[in-house]
Amino acid sequence: MSLRTALLEWDARLSEKMRVADKPGALRAIAVFFAHSGDSWLWVPALIIGWFYSNSGWKRWEVVEFVGISVLAALVLSIKFLVRRKRPEGEWGSIYRNTDPHSFPSGHAARAFLIAVVAAALAPTWLGILLWVWAPLVAIARVAMGVHYVSDIVAGALLGVVIAWIGLQIYEPILMWVSGFVGIPLW
Image (cartoon, rainbow, N blue to C red; front, side, top):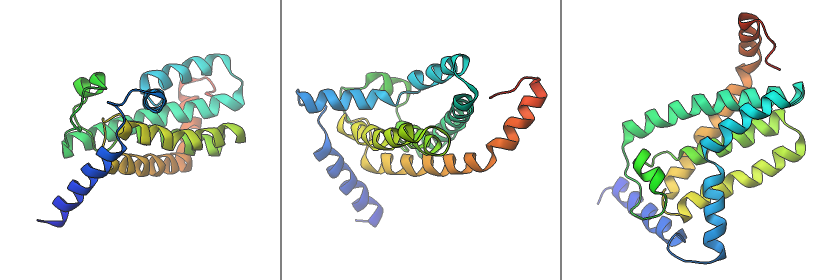
């Protein structure tokens, strides 16, 4: 047995032990909540709507989060289609299974950690702390609900942190250029 095969089998066993998707109760309900709370269809519209109703301090955070989520989504999908790792078998999460049959890396984990890193840098301290507590819960919930393996969420979380860090290094000049190009301030 190769090292790769051994690691994948260990990953599958650990992921199965964490699974609560088929076990009714409070733990499953909490996992469902956190598994969905990282959905892009929730975050993207919330950031867009927030931008129209917030002050300039919040607008910077909202714009950087929106752009980061968008860039990250393209990167995650590209990696998923290169790797083509099938999701764990299961019933829960048919929307994810039907629209995106690949599991590596976890887009939800990547998005949650990107959101937390950017919030820690640009949002009020209380929000950064809250989102740093939330991000690992989203990632773990994806394994608990059986739509990802542990290695998927670890890779996703690392990818989200790296892309957020890179984005925080370059967002100001890019936003200033775009603001000048479109003729309106973006924050």
